[in-house]
Amino acid sequence: MGKFLFWTLVVAILIFLTIPAVVVIMSSVNPTETLAFPPKGFSLHWYARAFSYDDFRTSFYSGLIVTFFASTIASVIGVAAAYVTHRYAFRGRRLLEFLLAAPLIIPRFTTGFGFLLVGAGLGINNGYTIVIVTHVVLVLPFVTRSVYVSLVNVDRSLERSAANLGASPINVLLRITLPLLTPGIVGGWIIAAILSFTEFTASLYVTSYATQTLPVAMYTYVREYTDPTIAAISALLIITTTLGMFIVDRTLGLKRVLAIESH
Image 1 (tube, helix red, strand yellow):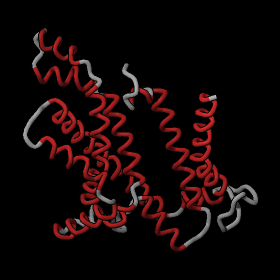
Image 2: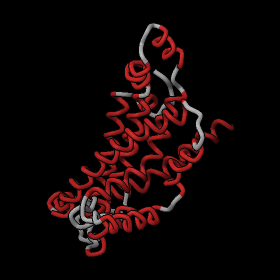
Image 3: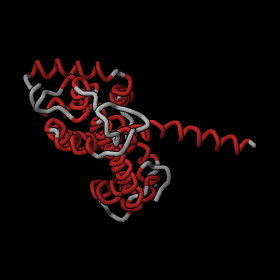
């Protein structure tokens, strides 16, 4: 009975989490110009509008630029930060760990407004630099945590064996440690990319019309129109994310990427 109640609860939670996505996808094919559920017919008109609307196209490309650079930079910094805080004991380590986790505590609008002031002081509010830096700060804790979990699961005897066989510390790092950390690095990059591409609150402060990301463009569109175009874009994001996770699971294995099991 206990096992039955447990799996009933799990199924109920999954249904509860899935229903909003199903409603959005079904609303996106509604032929009328107002959001309605259940849909009164079937039409792909709003998907065509989503692809043809200029602001959505430019903001999508801008979001890809910001996402790629922010995720990559955060991955490099996150690997170094996780390695240092895990392998070395030094004065200020606790402070460094707190600073790395601070973006999880500070509200997003506070972070965005703070970087808006920084960008204004440096005169860089009209370019991608301030947007990328903001996103790096926001996603860095997730990358660091993902890599840190992989470091905890690394078999240190492999590194010691390589060192005993004459490998230099840099060779041990490049040829033993980093390959073993690949699942955590890939997982951190994927999580950072998803969070960066869908980030809205902080992006609203630091983006301009030329650098606005897709969530900001969607917010601007909602203020002017009430048709199901936004539902169509949301459905595309849901489907794309699901397919991306499926591909990652087939190629790398989600359990390895998320450090649930070792290779």
